[in-house]
View (cartoon, helix red, strand yellow):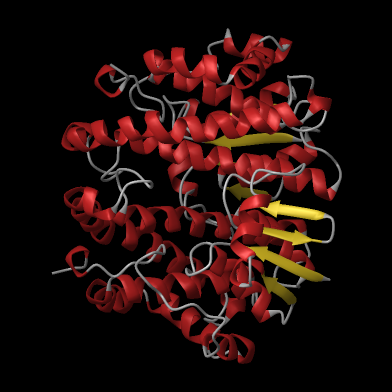
Length: 238
Length: 238
């Protein structure tokens, strides 16, 4: 199957969790908005068809058009062998994926606590308060949760959240660590020491041959200040 | 199957989307935390077992313990006949459910834009800004999206988001309208005129026999200022 991914050009954003799954599986896909006329094509499709999306990313897979990042990964997990086959295993993987999605919202809101349609510059004092609370309370709570899950999953041998194999959840947790390192380098130096199992998953994913090749390719868009993970030094730990 | 729902006593919160599904289906369930010693039992289970939850709600179904509201509804949609049987229909229902989950986060953050662990009183100026942006920009975008979905779904005859039958998505959209009416009565009077199809789903769900009986029962916890939808007049439209 040839997949078409529709996501904003120029940022990793939520599209990146889908890209990582497609890349790890060696899937045949096109990142439509990054091609000629692709952004127009993406915007024309938004809100259209029998299953319109509220926002990108959306994935075309044969006759299906699937929206919502975690929903796309639920679908791809089955098709690309990036999730267990059992109902219990699929639900657990999806539960982890949805918890990562919650974390992504909170990371986004560190720089946009008042309104996603407003400029960062227009919500900077609020962003400072929210980022401080995130680094103090929320990041430890989330990273601690995933660290506990990894500790309890002996079959994963420190590399996998779910059983003994790679899943979309591992790939997404890799992206969380990479992104937090970019956005909050000072805070992360401290957090990484407290949650070494989370860092170990990041490191194990980064050296997977297809992921390593992807990360070194121009297909991997660099982090920047338009995406979810933004490096604003004033929001990082002092 | 007898289900056990674990969620904070005293609030509707995210547990309510699960309760509505269980009630509509006439499922045999226990709202554990509302019984004697139930809160202790819930807290003991959090973070335990092979599929620990980051936060309530979680649902015990036979040997499964399922976390994340949308994940629970994905599971129950299949078992309680509250979602289509086809893969395409299930994915579409779940996509809508995840978009409702995104909206729920934004509604929560109108009164907690800085930190979910801080008091409302400690983030009131920020809450005023965020609530104003929500009512001005975000609520119309979300409600307009669901209104468009309803307009396009002719099979739903104005009552259903997915095909011609009730689904978890309809039940959840009911809760959104009921909650927004409670939290922002002035703003909603205006919004309801613009998105009448969304209101029609609310009204159709409210008169379903099992839902009407549930809403009139002590099992339905009243809205209050501890939940997701809080009525703080200063956050409503002037």
